[in-house]
Image 1 (tube, helix red, strand yellow):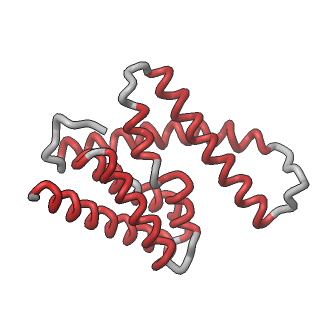
Image 2 (tube, one colour; image 1 turned 90 degrees about the vertical axis):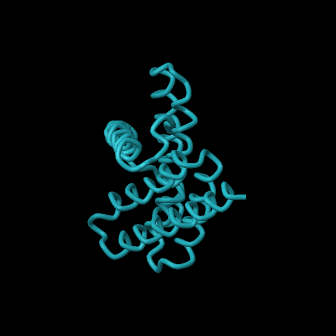
Image 3 (cartoon, rainbow, N blue to C red; image 1 turned 45 degrees about the vertical axis):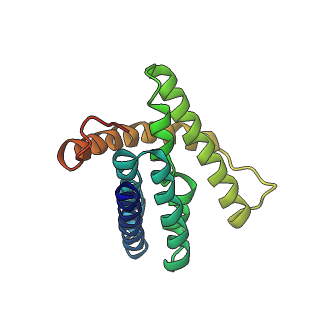
Length: 172
């Protein structure tokens, strides 16, 4: 019973902290992307501390609460469409020890997310039948920026494991 209580308590805490950061992201539009990325660290912390399913629970709870409580829907949508579930996917991908395969899968997940976001934004704000010249550049530059983000995110996770977590032997 003690383990269930710990999982529920930490999941609630990480979800609440993630929603607070998402709320700050709605108040500070210039730092919105960075704060949404920061909020995903709490999902990663849940994966490190308790495993994959509690990470999924934190993602689901923070997503639902973010959509319900935060007036500006852009930060919760960014969280839902990529940043929130990426720590769980990253954990699954990094169980494979082949670096080339890891990067191939990570880039595939990122580009699939960009495609979903692109169609979502295009259907809301642009003419769905029209094409945008240079859209391929979004994928090219986005993949390079994503590689930097993934590297920094990995360093932040290892910093958390080294300095905060009691599960030093457990990685994401």
